[in-house]
Image 1 (cartoon, rainbow over the protein chains, first blue to last red):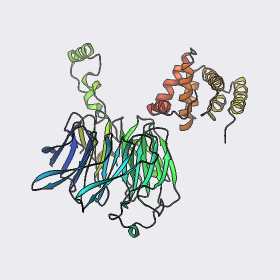
Image 2 (image 1 turned 135 degrees about the vertical axis):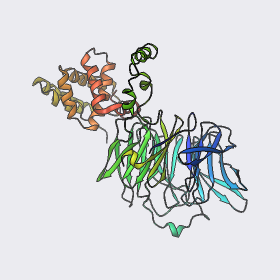
Image 3 (image 1 turned 90 degrees about the horizontal axis):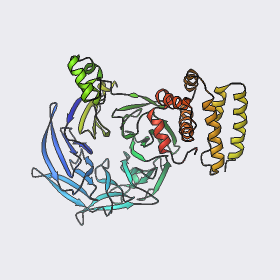
Image 4 (image 1 turned 60 degrees about the vertical axis):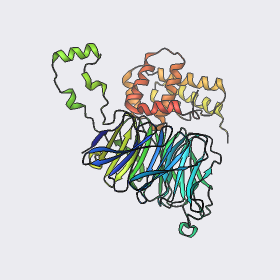
Length: 358
Length: 127
């Protein structure tokens, strides 16, 4: 059963902990709230207040249980749970504009931050000085970076931005990553930090970029309602773009190698599937209007609604047919059979794949 | 490799005129939507091109014809069509069939995504 939870007026970001018992989200302000999942309900556990403005990105390391948050206040904090409390550590990113997105690397020994300062930061912990160091990549980036995604090999980093470009950059950090372990990749084998390995131009802003679970595919959604797919299992890359007749997407997630769910302004999780080529499959949120329209609330209410609301279907006309009532901005994989989405309507929705018809 | 826009537009113009003379509006449309002059900087050429395409759109007298021909267009052609529809509407050619073109392309084929691409695509414009 789809679990719909109105946890705020609007949600900018959310992330689950390792065992999926807790979720951290930002209710469109400078706080990060942690909720515990109790059956079908969510209960507020703690509120973390350290940022000065809207928290734009949250990621929760499933192995290390560390939270990383980034905000429009140009900072990022790493939070560790010690002595029953969350302790924040400030990370000096050295950016002079808002941070837009953050993600732990697969091994959770580094994290990447995208920012409006036209640069991408890779941060790692330097034991000698006991602080987080930020290395920046700025080469030829002409505008805000909106999203970043780590490849499963812990080194390659995909970044998309409003300069209509997707880049794959090396996030290799000496001392943290091991060159022999990484070996040859589909993007090259010389990978000092900050090497621009590949880039693709699009016709509109790139909103989100994600790797498939194996790292053999890369997909990104752009603001002109086009979803792009890249085959990159080998050094021979093939690109395909699929236009959709819907409003633009904001985020996407690979359910598996051959299926991608994209979410956005249509407030409707949309499926793209691969069988030879990528195709737009369908919007997965079924219409729920039927029951409301047939309510039969009587003639008096019908005319009242017509006069006060100017609508003939009554209150049902003022709601969207979909579960989400506004743009869905984040989609995450909860587990192998469930997705979670959060949006500007303040809803955190848990979708078992069966509820999406998958 | 730069395109010879004048030659392309000229060639298509001849093809369109020939098709319209035999009342083959479908062939005229297919020719009109081919090789849109993206990147052309000659304002007069572009204006003439839009005038020609607008003429093709307005040569469809019956709404049923519009419905039928839209079914046969590819996704890429629909995107190009919507760009020309907006360009034609901007020319103030008053013909209600243009409004029908817009409504039908929106509802049947391209959806809002198609309109979004007209707005977002700054590189590939016909105006």
